[in-house]
Length: 89
Image 1 (cartoon, rainbow, N blue to C red):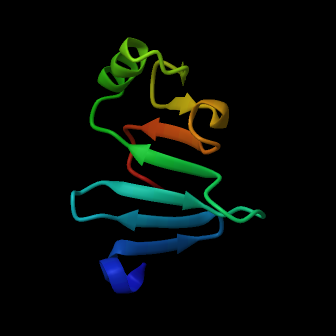
Image 2: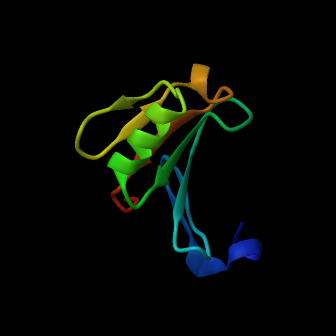
Image 3: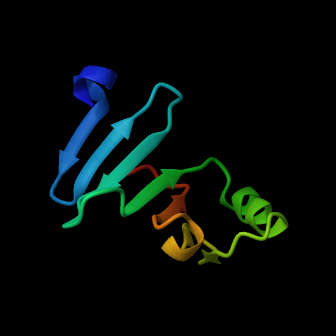
């Protein structure tokens, strides 16, 4: 990823890697004991609009009403998705 995005765009931590992509978004890749993508956190500009879109499109999700929307792996091709308005830590 460093070769693709540059050294400054990749931040590693104990629980995974955060990638700063050219669009200004950040993608968190969580570490897992299994192979493949198990979970991903995506930052969005408007959580309410995201929740509204999921509702309109019949996507099952949980919205805590404040700072996170979660989509079960059962509803997202085996990947646990979290949408947040907060920048990645």
